[in-house]
Image (cartoon, rainbow, N blue to C red; front, side, top):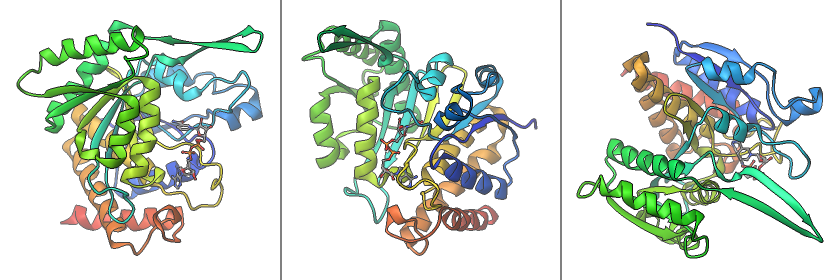
Length: 346
Ligand code: NAI
């Protein structure tokens, strides 16, 4: 069987720590890939004046998958987000983020949702201008094409995962034109799944409330770029910690896997970041590669890794500080790898 070719971008802040630990776990489990390492991010920009290595986008376009750590995007200045560039350049239009409550740390034990976030438009086209006189405006792009394909992706995912309901989250009461397009396209797509998957919609502010108070109201959420970004962190906080959840950015052909969290500068360099989010992204990548002909073994590897993480957290003997313990990133990762290897032998 040929080995998958995977581009690795370790990123900024805790990126190298969590991606490094995760790669070590994958290696211990015997995952065989052709790894191609490239640099990108704010630290690289400060060193070289460029946001990423010259051939990054070419390499990204020809590999089987991209495995990426978080990348810093400073709050001001001309530097544009590398993550957003990759998503847009490769047309990775769906950002799929599963959240399931973890033992010990979940605020609510009933989170079991997937957020499907539109990844290529909305306010993330970064078209902002000063109008003068202390006024600025940001343009928000909404297209029928993007609204239709993200809705379709959400329903297809619901079918694949055995979920029974898809909910559109929007603000069409205020943003009648842009969110209006999303609402219309959503219900057109929903017609095709009538009788199989239920469809409803919730306004974004109420969605934040339900996520905290009554998360089992949701199964699959589909939503525009900014709402998905914000609700993801809410979901992470209710289901566990920021250190726990991974995501897949997928297009029709390409995919990029990364933690949901950012660069966590407050703990960077201390060796205490939780590598679970990076591992969860790797689990999604293993399943994606397995479904694309790289062998059933990868899906099995994903299953045992997932179970090992869950059990390590449930047992509570080796936990990183965000989970209430004092283990280092590497200790936690080694513990997970050891347990996963035991399960592989079963
Ligand atoms: P953040 O996710 O980096 O941090 C929020 C809180 O979660 C902090 O207290 C942090 O210590 C904690 N945290 C995050 N990951 C953790 C882990 N693995 N283990 C333990 N604790 C963890 O969010 P923030 O501070 O808003 O973002 C920092 C930078 O990251 C920004 O420049 C932002 O643009 C970037 N970012 C990049 C992303 C990407 O590349 N996909 C995604 C999100 C943010």
